[in-house]
Image (cartoon, rainbow, N blue to C red):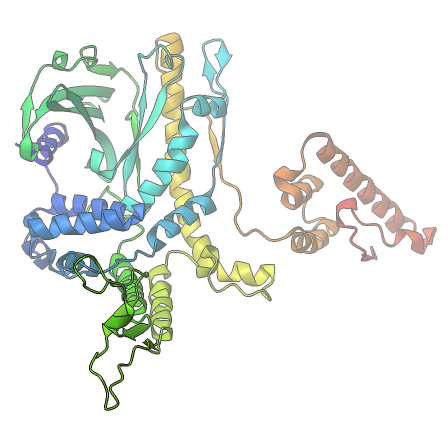
Length: 538
């Protein structure tokens, strides 16, 4: 029994009846030998494209070509005809990778940004600072370097919160992200009631697989269960005692009575109808185009290489080696063709070197690549977000208009990520309380997850919009300051601004009641909005 089958059995054991994603007699399933293998292969392929290394791409498609896409040969026929799928048969070509998939993901990660997570749930007689707790748990690096980019690229993954026994970190729980190939979900009614993590170990010359299941058990309690297997060739599994691997002998199944949360947080941003509960890569439907871009870039590179100047020479002008043969000049990528050494009618031999330079039409490649890039970005991210097609004459409003696709994609990611991180913070807090008090809290703490704005209006445009509303009394002083300054104005500075606004409002009211005070009071405006323009009160 291999890993895939074992996990299927493991999930089925506590999930019960296995529900299929659709009618197994549909045409799509008729061409698929193993749907789970297709799901995993899609995630692995997307990961290779995200890593952005041409050697990794060549190695991946070479391996698949050698294996003949063994598990799903018919379903993967198109992959076999990719540029990266057939180029391994060519020896003397340079394969150029655009790096566009990685640029898309890394840019989206930067656009989403790092959220501000706050909350002070109780722990015994004291409180826990959630922001500090997550920092101590190693959250930030896992979030920016693994969870966000790999969830976008592969489609899904999961956070795991652990109470470690290592004395160097025992004061705090640890948070760790598992990528798609190392995690499986048990889904019931659209909700994950169990997560199976795969952990690989090597001891001596033997490999082992630890399956760590976190689930809500039949009694409705959160539980952690362990199974250890010796991993053989072709992923064959043989169950072995936990004591077999040094360092794992202390692992015991754990149950938390009354705690109703799975001690893991599934991560997915885009739904996959073919795999309910699992996610879909941001590259879904775009890898064909990525392959075409690389093909065009490689053709352009090859065209430039074979179109370099060709020099015709007479062998008489070259030096000789030890055997008396002409030495070929060693100059990068220049082609030499030997001219005839036969004397002409006057008995002279032409020893001159002639050079020819072909005309290149690289514009056709540029146009093709621009069109392919445009199609690849459609529906994912605006070209201007990647720095493409930005005009120096574009003002801030025009740039925001160009970034609408990015804004819509970001809003969807932020909505999902907010829920993911709130669950993560709640579980991490619960584990910290458990470490400090020996009991898991049964109430849900109040935790806030807030992302910063993206492509928000400038201060000037915000002021022009908010000032008439403030003057008309449609918004309060507090709301005016919050919307205009946000987090940029805090503490005493914020209080002074509020006092100035209140004073100006009072003065406005006094002028309204006393029209004879004169024109000098007709231009009272809040301090934050005095930009050289007068705003009459009457």
